[in-house]
Image (cartoon, rainbow, N blue to C red):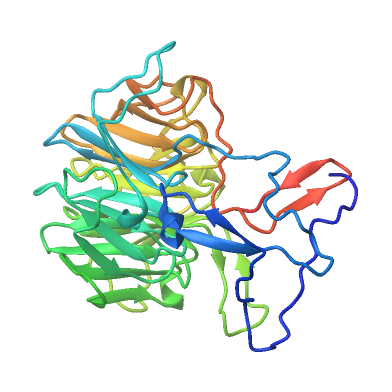
Length: 403
Protein backbone atom coordinates (compact mmCIF):
# COMPACT_ATOMS: atom_id res chain seq x y z
CA UNK A 1 0.00 0.00 0.00
CA UNK A 2 1.12 3.56 -0.51
CA UNK A 3 1.51 3.23 -4.28
CA UNK A 4 -0.80 2.07 -7.11
CA UNK A 5 -0.82 -1.67 -7.58
CA UNK A 6 -2.58 -3.82 -10.21
CA UNK A 7 -4.79 -6.27 -8.35
CA UNK A 8 -6.44 -8.16 -11.21
CA UNK A 9 -7.70 -7.86 -14.77
CA UNK A 10 -11.08 -9.38 -15.65
CA UNK A 11 -12.72 -9.83 -19.06
CA UNK A 12 -16.34 -8.71 -19.36
CA UNK A 13 -18.84 -11.16 -20.92
CA UNK A 14 -19.54 -10.70 -24.64
CA UNK A 15 -23.29 -11.01 -24.05
CA UNK A 16 -24.56 -7.65 -22.72
CA UNK A 17 -27.48 -9.44 -21.04
CA UNK A 18 -25.23 -11.77 -19.08
CA UNK A 19 -24.17 -11.09 -15.52
CA UNK A 20 -21.77 -13.99 -15.02
CA UNK A 21 -19.61 -16.16 -17.19
CA UNK A 22 -20.35 -19.86 -17.20
CA UNK A 23 -17.77 -21.87 -15.33
CA UNK A 24 -14.86 -23.16 -17.38
CA UNK A 25 -12.17 -25.73 -16.92
CA UNK A 26 -10.00 -23.00 -15.43
CA UNK A 27 -12.44 -22.37 -12.59
CA UNK A 28 -11.31 -23.01 -9.05
CA UNK A 29 -13.57 -23.99 -6.19
CA UNK A 30 -13.84 -21.88 -3.06
CA UNK A 31 -15.62 -23.22 0.02
CA UNK A 32 -17.74 -20.84 2.08
CA UNK A 33 -17.59 -21.16 5.84
CA UNK A 34 -20.20 -23.52 7.31
CA UNK A 35 -20.34 -21.55 10.53
CA UNK A 36 -22.46 -18.64 9.31
CA UNK A 37 -25.08 -17.73 6.74
CA UNK A 38 -22.57 -17.73 3.89
CA UNK A 39 -22.38 -21.48 4.34
CA UNK A 40 -25.65 -21.61 2.38
CA UNK A 41 -23.69 -20.81 -0.75
CA UNK A 42 -21.72 -24.03 -0.36
CA UNK A 43 -19.17 -24.21 -3.16
CA UNK A 44 -18.55 -21.14 -5.30
CA UNK A 45 -16.48 -21.05 -8.48
CA UNK A 46 -13.95 -18.35 -9.28
CA UNK A 47 -12.73 -18.24 -12.87
CA UNK A 48 -9.10 -17.78 -13.84
CA UNK A 49 -8.84 -15.92 -17.12
CA UNK A 50 -6.78 -17.48 -19.92
CA UNK A 51 -6.46 -14.33 -22.02
CA UNK A 52 -3.76 -12.33 -20.28
CA UNK A 53 -5.59 -11.55 -17.04
CA UNK A 54 -4.45 -12.36 -13.53
CA UNK A 55 -3.86 -16.09 -13.12
CA UNK A 56 -3.44 -16.52 -9.37
CA UNK A 57 -7.09 -16.23 -8.29
CA UNK A 58 -6.55 -18.24 -5.09
CA UNK A 59 -3.66 -16.16 -3.75
CA UNK A 60 -3.84 -15.50 -0.01
CA UNK A 61 -4.20 -11.94 1.30
CA UNK A 62 -1.11 -10.14 2.51
CA UNK A 63 -2.83 -9.63 5.87
CA UNK A 64 -6.32 -9.64 7.36
CA UNK A 65 -8.02 -7.17 9.69
CA UNK A 66 -10.65 -9.22 11.47
CA UNK A 67 -12.17 -9.42 14.93
CA UNK A 68 -12.66 -13.06 15.89
CA UNK A 69 -14.38 -12.41 19.23
CA UNK A 70 -18.09 -11.83 19.86
CA UNK A 71 -19.23 -8.20 19.84
CA UNK A 72 -22.42 -7.67 21.80
CA UNK A 73 -25.17 -5.41 20.47
CA UNK A 74 -28.05 -6.27 22.82
CA UNK A 75 -28.85 -7.92 26.15
CA UNK A 76 -31.91 -9.47 27.77
CA UNK A 77 -32.33 -11.17 31.14
CA UNK A 78 -34.57 -14.18 31.77
CA UNK A 79 -35.18 -13.71 35.49
CA UNK A 80 -37.21 -16.92 35.77
CA UNK A 81 -34.31 -19.08 34.65
CA UNK A 82 -31.54 -16.76 35.85
CA UNK A 83 -29.98 -16.47 32.40
CA UNK A 84 -28.56 -13.64 30.30
CA UNK A 85 -28.90 -13.59 26.49
CA UNK A 86 -26.38 -11.59 24.47
CA UNK A 87 -26.67 -10.67 20.78
CA UNK A 88 -23.33 -11.15 19.03
CA UNK A 89 -23.53 -9.28 15.74
CA UNK A 90 -19.90 -9.93 14.81
CA UNK A 91 -20.06 -13.72 14.59
CA UNK A 92 -23.85 -13.68 14.12
CA UNK A 93 -24.80 -15.68 17.19
CA UNK A 94 -26.91 -15.52 20.34
CA UNK A 95 -24.95 -16.50 23.46
CA UNK A 96 -26.52 -17.57 26.74
CA UNK A 97 -24.83 -17.19 30.14
CA UNK A 98 -25.71 -17.58 33.79
CA UNK A 99 -26.89 -14.28 35.24
CA UNK A 100 -24.30 -14.67 37.99
CA UNK A 101 -21.31 -15.34 35.73
CA UNK A 102 -18.41 -13.05 36.57
CA UNK A 103 -15.07 -12.85 34.76
CA UNK A 104 -12.72 -11.59 37.44
CA UNK A 105 -9.35 -9.97 36.62
CA UNK A 106 -6.81 -12.54 35.48
CA UNK A 107 -9.40 -15.17 34.55
CA UNK A 108 -10.14 -16.61 31.08
CA UNK A 109 -13.13 -15.42 29.00
CA UNK A 110 -16.57 -16.44 30.25
CA UNK A 111 -17.89 -19.71 28.82
CA UNK A 112 -21.42 -19.59 27.42
CA UNK A 113 -23.95 -22.21 28.51
CA UNK A 114 -25.12 -22.55 24.92
CA UNK A 115 -24.78 -20.71 21.61
CA UNK A 116 -27.30 -20.34 18.79
CA UNK A 117 -25.23 -20.03 15.60
CA UNK A 118 -25.16 -21.33 12.03
CA UNK A 119 -26.69 -20.88 8.61
CA UNK A 120 -30.00 -22.54 9.56
CA UNK A 121 -30.60 -20.00 12.33
CA UNK A 122 -30.86 -17.10 9.85
CA UNK A 123 -29.21 -14.90 12.49
CA UNK A 124 -27.42 -11.98 10.78
CA UNK A 125 -26.81 -8.34 11.67
CA UNK A 126 -28.71 -9.15 14.87
CA UNK A 127 -29.43 -5.89 16.69
CA UNK A 128 -31.95 -6.75 19.43
CA UNK A 129 -32.86 -9.75 21.57
CA UNK A 130 -36.05 -10.23 23.59
CA UNK A 131 -36.99 -13.10 25.91
CA UNK A 132 -40.64 -14.03 26.38
CA UNK A 133 -41.17 -13.93 30.16
CA UNK A 134 -43.82 -16.68 30.00
CA UNK A 135 -42.46 -19.44 27.75
CA UNK A 136 -38.86 -18.27 27.37
CA UNK A 137 -38.99 -17.93 23.58
CA UNK A 138 -36.02 -16.01 22.14
CA UNK A 139 -36.77 -13.23 19.63
CA UNK A 140 -33.96 -11.86 17.45
CA UNK A 141 -34.31 -8.73 15.29
CA UNK A 142 -32.24 -8.99 12.10
CA UNK A 143 -31.08 -5.54 10.96
CA UNK A 144 -29.67 -4.44 7.60
CA UNK A 145 -30.41 -7.11 4.96
CA UNK A 146 -31.89 -9.52 7.52
CA UNK A 147 -35.40 -8.06 7.25
CA UNK A 148 -36.92 -10.61 9.65
CA UNK A 149 -37.53 -11.35 13.31
CA UNK A 150 -36.65 -14.96 14.02
CA UNK A 151 -37.91 -16.78 17.12
CA UNK A 152 -36.30 -19.77 18.83
CA UNK A 153 -37.44 -22.01 21.65
CA UNK A 154 -35.79 -21.22 24.97
CA UNK A 155 -33.47 -24.23 24.93
CA UNK A 156 -32.40 -23.88 21.28
CA UNK A 157 -28.69 -24.37 20.72
CA UNK A 158 -26.26 -24.77 17.85
CA UNK A 159 -27.47 -24.56 14.26
CA UNK A 160 -31.15 -24.55 15.20
CA UNK A 161 -33.92 -23.49 12.84
CA UNK A 162 -36.31 -20.78 14.05
CA UNK A 163 -39.71 -21.94 15.26
CA UNK A 164 -41.21 -18.81 13.73
CA UNK A 165 -40.20 -16.05 11.30
CA UNK A 166 -41.81 -12.67 10.66
CA UNK A 167 -40.95 -10.58 7.63
CA UNK A 168 -40.46 -6.97 8.78
CA UNK A 169 -39.58 -3.67 7.14
CA UNK A 170 -36.01 -3.26 5.91
CA UNK A 171 -33.68 -1.77 8.56
CA UNK A 172 -35.67 -2.93 11.62
CA UNK A 173 -33.58 -2.23 14.72
CA UNK A 174 -35.28 -2.81 18.09
CA UNK A 175 -38.40 -4.42 19.54
CA UNK A 176 -40.46 -4.27 22.72
CA UNK A 177 -43.36 -6.46 23.84
CA UNK A 178 -46.62 -5.27 25.42
CA UNK A 179 -47.69 -8.43 27.23
CA UNK A 180 -50.96 -6.91 28.46
CA UNK A 181 -52.22 -6.01 24.97
CA UNK A 182 -50.57 -8.98 23.26
CA UNK A 183 -48.66 -6.93 20.70
CA UNK A 184 -45.07 -5.97 20.02
CA UNK A 185 -43.38 -2.84 18.69
CA UNK A 186 -40.56 -2.70 16.11
CA UNK A 187 -38.49 0.41 15.36
CA UNK A 188 -37.25 0.99 11.80
CA UNK A 189 -34.34 3.26 10.92
CA UNK A 190 -35.42 4.44 7.45
CA UNK A 191 -38.01 5.41 6.50
CA UNK A 192 -38.28 6.10 10.26
CA UNK A 193 -41.29 4.39 11.80
CA UNK A 194 -42.60 2.15 14.55
CA UNK A 195 -44.57 -0.90 13.42
CA UNK A 196 -46.89 -2.70 15.86
CA UNK A 197 -47.64 -6.39 15.30
CA UNK A 198 -49.92 -8.96 16.86
CA UNK A 199 -48.09 -11.16 19.33
CA UNK A 200 -47.35 -14.41 17.55
CA UNK A 201 -47.30 -12.79 14.10
CA UNK A 202 -45.37 -14.75 11.50
CA UNK A 203 -44.73 -14.99 7.79
CA UNK A 204 -45.89 -11.99 5.78
CA UNK A 205 -48.39 -10.75 8.37
CA UNK A 206 -48.76 -6.97 8.25
CA UNK A 207 -48.57 -4.59 11.24
CA UNK A 208 -51.72 -3.71 13.16
CA UNK A 209 -50.71 -0.06 12.98
CA UNK A 210 -47.82 2.20 11.99
CA UNK A 211 -46.41 5.33 13.60
CA UNK A 212 -44.94 7.16 10.59
CA UNK A 213 -44.91 10.61 9.00
CA UNK A 214 -43.50 14.12 9.27
CA UNK A 215 -45.44 15.02 12.42
CA UNK A 216 -43.89 12.13 14.36
CA UNK A 217 -40.44 13.80 14.12
CA UNK A 218 -38.85 10.36 13.91
CA UNK A 219 -35.43 10.48 12.25
CA UNK A 220 -33.15 7.46 11.86
CA UNK A 221 -34.90 5.68 14.73
CA UNK A 222 -32.88 3.19 16.76
CA UNK A 223 -33.59 2.26 20.37
CA UNK A 224 -37.12 1.92 21.68
CA UNK A 225 -38.83 1.18 25.00
CA UNK A 226 -42.39 1.05 26.26
CA UNK A 227 -43.86 1.90 29.66
CA UNK A 228 -47.05 -0.16 29.95
CA UNK A 229 -47.81 1.25 33.41
CA UNK A 230 -47.82 4.89 32.23
CA UNK A 231 -48.89 4.04 28.65
CA UNK A 232 -45.85 5.63 26.97
CA UNK A 233 -43.67 4.80 23.97
CA UNK A 234 -40.06 6.08 23.82
CA UNK A 235 -37.98 6.17 20.62
CA UNK A 236 -34.44 7.52 20.28
CA UNK A 237 -33.36 9.05 16.99
CA UNK A 238 -29.96 9.85 15.48
CA UNK A 239 -31.35 12.85 13.59
CA UNK A 240 -30.58 11.77 10.01
CA UNK A 241 -33.48 12.06 7.57
CA UNK A 242 -34.27 12.28 3.86
CA UNK A 243 -37.17 11.93 1.47
CA UNK A 244 -35.96 9.36 -1.04
CA UNK A 245 -38.16 10.93 -3.70
CA UNK A 246 -36.77 14.44 -3.27
CA UNK A 247 -33.14 15.02 -4.33
CA UNK A 248 -31.20 17.14 -1.85
CA UNK A 249 -33.68 16.63 0.98
CA UNK A 250 -31.22 14.85 3.27
CA UNK A 251 -30.31 16.54 6.53
CA UNK A 252 -28.44 15.87 9.75
CA UNK A 253 -30.28 16.92 12.90
CA UNK A 254 -29.48 16.52 16.60
CA UNK A 255 -30.21 13.24 18.40
CA UNK A 256 -33.54 13.11 20.22
CA UNK A 257 -35.80 10.95 22.34
CA UNK A 258 -39.40 11.30 21.19
CA UNK A 259 -42.21 10.28 23.56
CA UNK A 260 -45.67 9.14 22.38
CA UNK A 261 -48.88 7.64 23.65
CA UNK A 262 -48.48 3.87 23.83
CA UNK A 263 -51.22 3.40 21.22
CA UNK A 264 -50.01 6.22 18.94
CA UNK A 265 -50.94 5.64 15.31
CA UNK A 266 -50.30 7.19 11.92
CA UNK A 267 -48.73 10.62 11.56
CA UNK A 268 -49.05 11.50 15.25
CA UNK A 269 -46.93 14.16 16.94
CA UNK A 270 -44.94 13.25 20.07
CA UNK A 271 -46.17 14.25 23.51
CA UNK A 272 -42.72 15.68 24.24
CA UNK A 273 -39.12 15.56 23.03
CA UNK A 274 -35.85 15.23 24.96
CA UNK A 275 -33.22 17.12 22.97
CA UNK A 276 -30.27 19.46 23.44
CA UNK A 277 -26.64 19.66 24.59
CA UNK A 278 -27.51 19.13 28.28
CA UNK A 279 -28.98 15.70 27.50
CA UNK A 280 -25.58 14.30 26.45
CA UNK A 281 -27.25 12.18 23.76
CA UNK A 282 -24.66 10.92 21.27
CA UNK A 283 -25.66 8.02 19.01
CA UNK A 284 -28.10 6.55 21.56
CA UNK A 285 -28.76 2.83 21.21
CA UNK A 286 -31.07 0.56 23.18
CA UNK A 287 -33.38 1.86 25.91
CA UNK A 288 -35.10 0.17 28.85
CA UNK A 289 -37.69 1.34 31.40
CA UNK A 290 -37.79 0.69 35.15
CA UNK A 291 -41.51 0.03 35.56
CA UNK A 292 -41.43 0.84 39.28
CA UNK A 293 -40.10 4.39 38.90
CA UNK A 294 -40.67 5.11 35.21
CA UNK A 295 -36.97 5.97 34.79
CA UNK A 296 -35.68 5.58 31.22
CA UNK A 297 -32.20 4.04 30.80
CA UNK A 298 -30.31 4.82 27.57
CA UNK A 299 -27.18 3.15 26.18
CA UNK A 300 -25.27 6.17 24.88
CA UNK A 301 -22.77 4.70 22.40
CA UNK A 302 -20.42 7.59 21.56
CA UNK A 303 -20.96 9.22 24.95
CA UNK A 304 -19.41 6.08 26.49
CA UNK A 305 -22.04 6.05 29.23
CA UNK A 306 -25.46 4.96 30.44
CA UNK A 307 -27.77 7.92 31.01
CA UNK A 308 -31.04 7.94 32.92
CA UNK A 309 -34.00 10.28 32.42
CA UNK A 310 -37.19 10.64 34.41
CA UNK A 311 -40.38 9.59 32.67
CA UNK A 312 -41.69 13.17 32.54
CA UNK A 313 -38.47 14.82 31.30
CA UNK A 314 -38.65 17.02 28.21
CA UNK A 315 -36.57 19.58 26.35
CA UNK A 316 -32.90 20.27 27.01
CA UNK A 317 -32.62 18.49 30.35
CA UNK A 318 -29.58 16.87 31.96
CA UNK A 319 -29.84 13.17 32.85
CA UNK A 320 -30.99 12.37 36.38
CA UNK A 321 -28.07 9.94 36.68
CA UNK A 322 -25.09 8.99 34.53
CA UNK A 323 -22.92 5.87 34.76
CA UNK A 324 -19.60 6.91 33.24
CA UNK A 325 -15.88 6.67 33.88
CA UNK A 326 -12.85 4.37 33.79
CA UNK A 327 -14.07 2.21 36.66
CA UNK A 328 -17.35 1.34 34.90
CA UNK A 329 -15.80 -0.80 32.16
CA UNK A 330 -18.17 0.80 29.64
CA UNK A 331 -16.82 0.94 26.10
CA UNK A 332 -19.20 2.11 23.38
CA UNK A 333 -22.33 0.70 25.07
CA UNK A 334 -25.20 0.02 22.66
CA UNK A 335 -27.37 -2.39 24.66
CA UNK A 336 -29.12 -1.85 28.00
CA UNK A 337 -31.62 -3.87 30.04
CA UNK A 338 -33.33 -3.09 33.35
CA UNK A 339 -33.66 -6.19 35.55
CA UNK A 340 -36.35 -4.93 37.93
CA UNK A 341 -36.57 -8.19 39.89
CA UNK A 342 -32.89 -8.13 40.88
CA UNK A 343 -32.56 -4.31 40.93
CA UNK A 344 -29.78 -4.32 38.34
CA UNK A 345 -29.08 -2.69 34.99
CA UNK A 346 -27.07 -4.41 32.24
CA UNK A 347 -25.05 -2.92 29.39
CA UNK A 348 -23.39 -4.47 26.35
CA UNK A 349 -20.14 -2.93 25.14
CA UNK A 350 -19.10 -3.23 21.50
CA UNK A 351 -15.71 -1.77 22.37
CA UNK A 352 -14.41 -4.68 24.46
CA UNK A 353 -16.63 -7.78 23.96
CA UNK A 354 -18.24 -7.51 27.40
CA UNK A 355 -21.54 -7.19 29.19
CA UNK A 356 -21.42 -5.30 32.49
CA UNK A 357 -24.02 -5.07 35.25
CA UNK A 358 -24.55 -2.35 37.89
CA UNK A 359 -26.87 -1.58 40.80
CA UNK A 360 -30.07 -0.12 39.39
CA UNK A 361 -29.54 3.23 41.13
CA UNK A 362 -25.82 3.47 40.28
CA UNK A 363 -24.49 6.92 39.46
CA UNK A 364 -21.07 8.21 38.46
CA UNK A 365 -17.84 6.25 38.04
CA UNK A 366 -19.13 2.99 39.51
CA UNK A 367 -17.41 -0.38 39.08
CA UNK A 368 -19.66 -3.15 37.73
CA UNK A 369 -21.05 -5.78 40.06
CA UNK A 370 -20.13 -8.49 37.54
CA UNK A 371 -18.67 -8.77 34.05
CA UNK A 372 -19.29 -11.27 31.26
CA UNK A 373 -16.20 -11.13 29.08
CA UNK A 374 -15.89 -13.01 25.77
CA UNK A 375 -12.35 -12.00 24.84
CA UNK A 376 -8.96 -11.55 26.44
CA UNK A 377 -8.79 -9.11 29.32
CA UNK A 378 -8.05 -5.58 28.10
CA UNK A 379 -9.13 -6.32 24.52
CA UNK A 380 -10.22 -3.42 22.32
CA UNK A 381 -12.65 -4.48 19.59
CA UNK A 382 -12.27 -3.39 15.99
CA UNK A 383 -15.98 -2.44 16.11
CA UNK A 384 -16.53 -3.51 12.50
CA UNK A 385 -20.09 -3.81 11.25
CA UNK A 386 -20.75 -4.63 7.58
CA UNK A 387 -17.60 -3.01 6.25
CA UNK A 388 -17.80 -1.68 2.70
CA UNK A 389 -16.31 0.87 0.28
CA UNK A 390 -12.87 1.03 1.90
CA UNK A 391 -10.57 3.97 1.26
CA UNK A 392 -6.85 4.46 1.83
CA UNK A 393 -5.37 7.80 2.91
CA UNK A 394 -1.82 7.72 1.52
CA UNK A 395 -0.81 10.92 3.33
CA UNK A 396 -1.68 9.59 6.77
CA UNK A 397 -1.19 5.93 5.77
CA UNK A 398 -4.60 5.10 7.23
CA UNK A 399 -7.35 2.74 6.10
CA UNK A 400 -10.81 4.33 6.31
CA UNK A 401 -13.53 1.77 7.06
CA UNK A 402 -17.19 2.79 6.72
CA UNK A 403 -19.58 0.55 8.70
